[in-house]
Length: 185
Image (cartoon, rainbow, N blue to C red; front, side, top):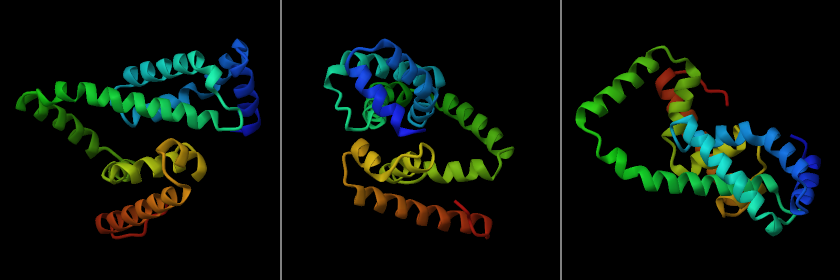
């Protein structure tokens, strides 16, 4: 998306402009829900996290620095909320019975049988180390620049680049082993 409206929205949101906030919400809500879905499995939970993030944005609008990325600010809020959600509900999943786990795995196996190469790549991405996966997805799926990703991940842009390069190398190698053909990313 064009950065110009983001900068303008950021300034206007800081001033309390509800129309700018609404426009930003409508433009980016689906993008942020997609991002949150990478952390939580259920879309309703992802939607709740994103809505809460927008509430947080409005409540903290006076802290906005228009020269900094509004999208990075939101990604950071959503990422932290998702990680908190995972931490808070981890014990719930740890208490699943063996039968419940088998059922969950059977459902996944049925879906995997009909999955395409895209699903295979998605599975390989999910196997990446957490930081590599996060940097790769923010770059490739969300189209963020290295400096924006660095701000979200609280690392340097060089570290972001290193994570992405390592992720690509790992993905290509794993895909080649499985398919015996080169992978195009």
